[in-house]
Image (cartoon, rainbow, N blue to C red; front, side, top):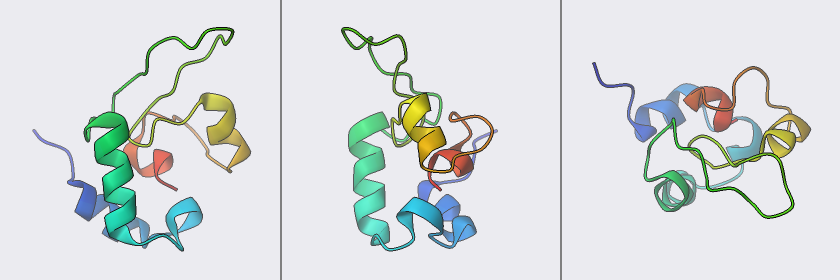
Length: 81
């Protein structure tokens, strides 16, 4: 069973949080560039870091938390807040 589309997720979020002031087209472009739309994407190792970028927007876990993320950064709704 396929998950919600990026458009459906953006609509469900009401573009709140970090994407609130960004045009939906920009957020969708970032998602396409960073993860190809795969909410389970995990980035390559970063030299000198122990964490990897995760989720649709490819946020580092520390950045995810600093931006107010709650729960799992691989959760597509949480990753796009």
